[in-house]
Length: 220
Image (cartoon, rainbow, N blue to C red; front, top):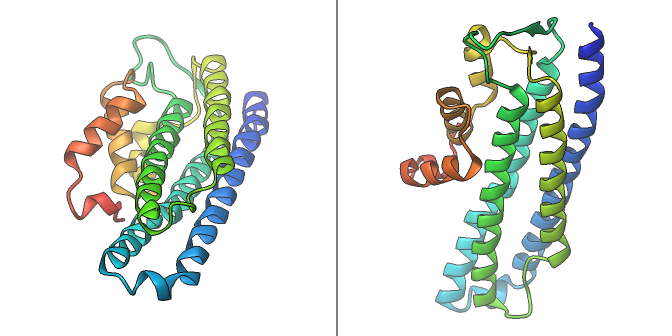
């Protein structure tokens, strides 16, 4: 393993820790809300509108679990980095402008943006059940904090190693696509390969226009 690869592994271990902590607090909040729904099920199911709200919350909470899978996919990509020696690229190279760190920044950026959207929806339905109960404020703050920390770490890696490639995406595209197994993850990669300047907001806007009833639940 090269010196660069060893250093990259050290940096990525910090990113992995952030991702694991993110999934831990998401799972904690998932159980917090689920326990609330179970405790008040006898009340909510007595009213049709409440029953509809409970079903909606349960539907949106599925994304909390899906986020854990997306994080696992990103960590799997991290583990592939360093398997082969990094190689230099010139400005004329077909991979010029591609960064696996930018790709994963986009993957997690899109995933967390969707998580926040789901949180807003869940809170809206929870307010129909009980105005005094909602997603905890400290959880929302922690999600934003983890999001900012991920962005900082990925940008440092991207800028520091902008002339090196750690994965030959053209040779390993199928394998990477198998790792990024959800609809939205594959679209993120496709859009990034088409345009290295694509942003999280542009990807999210695109996904909102192409997801139908089947893809909106991010089937594998």
